[in-house]
Length: 310
Image 1: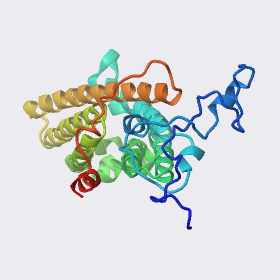
Image 2: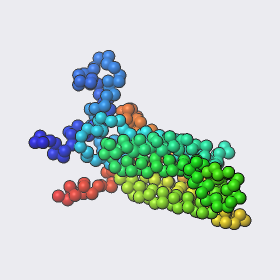
Image 3: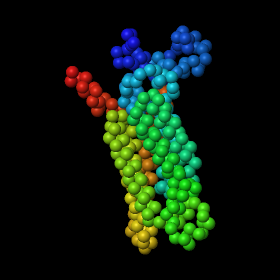
Image 4: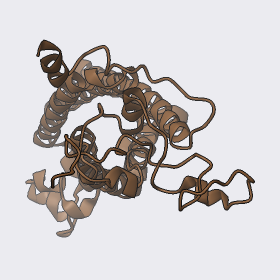
């Protein structure tokens, strides 16, 4: 196209996804204040946003994408955050045993599927559509994690029942899946611990990448890295307890690691709620904005360095 924008980007792409100006749908002024309030929230913004505001809204450094998808669709980031927070925050309280809670979050199995799994995957698809790769990968990863974690707690998936090889113990279930005796099998606890180890590894990668986003996001991945390490250690120690019920030291370490893991995820949740508040206020052009500690200008991207070198 001869008259295309030099960067194949629509000139208005750097606009907020909501219109908070006094213009109507057709661009006519509504200075009399008589227009429909929803008109001022139309999708097709008229406010130029800075890289800092873009990063706050989408949890990703500003990038150039073709088309007007960010003006066509709503911001999927807060939806994914809701799924993450309403799954993690109660689980954190369970792990720390507050008010007698426990059971590794089994009471919230439905929450893990429909909030953590479904909402985060929907948010991930939304991020993919509007071209935010980092948020797309992060939300998709944790959406799958919550679904997998919830499935482990559902007896029908037989995650722990498959480890029951003792005929006497298996007979007590009369062939039903999900034999709870499998939770005391060393192989199950050690195997699940390795899943947590590699979740910690991917959080380490996310942590490095988040150094170009904001301090709150960095806090989330740093504390998640610590939490997964603690929980992996807890399951490894539970495997030792299953091998020797008299191993008091391993039992004590497991209990402490679970509480520590819950404490770290609780800090993760606090940072997540803070980001969620910041995004919602920014999305509505609220007069009071919450800083998230933008790092996009502190750590320059490779493309920016190349431009300055030319």
